[in-house]
Image (cartoon, rainbow, N blue to C red; front, top):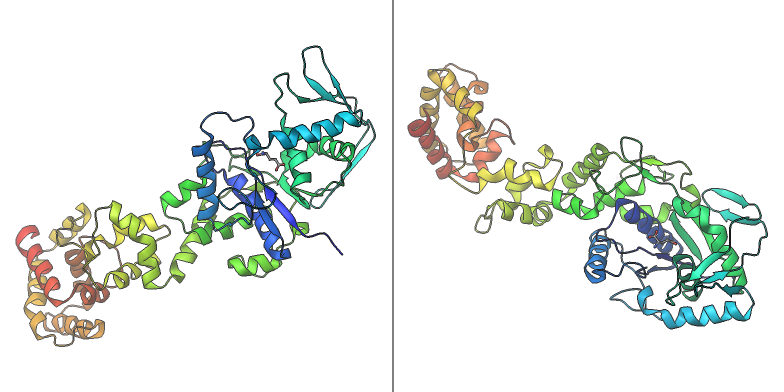
Length: 439
Ligand code: GLU
């Protein structure tokens, strides 16, 4: 019987969730969900004395936003806890004693303790990088315990992987060069090493490793700029992995079904914000009106737009969905649906004033409005066509003027859609306002 799949994401709390860490978590999560295994979250907080609680929350928030739920870990618990390295000192002491008893440690004059390497050649059978051979090392023996009794990263990382019965270690490629040390320690502790999968780095568009300063480096920035978690999830999956599928836009459940660690690339991935934004636009367009309004609400609220009493709010927001890529763009595209005092763009004022007949045409529309009995989009369109015919112009000469008048903008959904949504009375008021205040 094969061992149950138990994978872990083991971040050191740095105050934010980095896109590279999120992608590592994502691959672990996909692997666990694909194999019916467990995804464990372990906080490696031994070195980070300062402000660990807030730093950890940033990681939890980021994982939750992406929908990466963990089966064991902080706030969830589990039989192998505590899931904070800072709370596991007694476990490390016990393993340390085991290593001592096996004669694999020695103490330096300053009190630091070193682990005696086996000095055997070690092979890492990596699911992504293939068999990586490390020759018998000439490196000095590794310090595992400091004079103050605290343990270094390699030791606690290995102990926890043993204790938590981790079956597969899926982590950043930057850890590959030290993996032989981990395997040497595992053997010395009488344990069988897990399978390893070292995943490639994410590079910024300039070709260097993504750093905190790079656009898109912090997961909370996606939420703030109006990305949907599903879109970011989909995009991050493709950074270093090509699913066996004809399409790129793949929903969560299908990604779980398709995921295989063996398909992860061994070459580095290149981060592309434009591509990520493209994914977001695709996901936004699929949202039903109510869902889009729900997702857009924080952005509308922070722009001071109250959609509360407007029953057409969801439809109004939905009407601009083809125009936007980010939720944060919605207020600029839809604000006039929710207020009568919307501003007029400079360009719009110039265009309204460009021709003297514009005023007469708008007046003609205003005069005709009461005779439109069917205020549907088609009823409105028929009404405008008859005004155009009476004035011997094409509807195309009137519709832009109406767009300017009804929205203050030079872009947006169909004019008939706007008129229908704001209603007959507001349409009349808006035209009247332009006639008296602008022209
Ligand atoms: N705390 C380590 C890191 O953040 C984890 C390494 C590992 O996954 O083994 O890089």
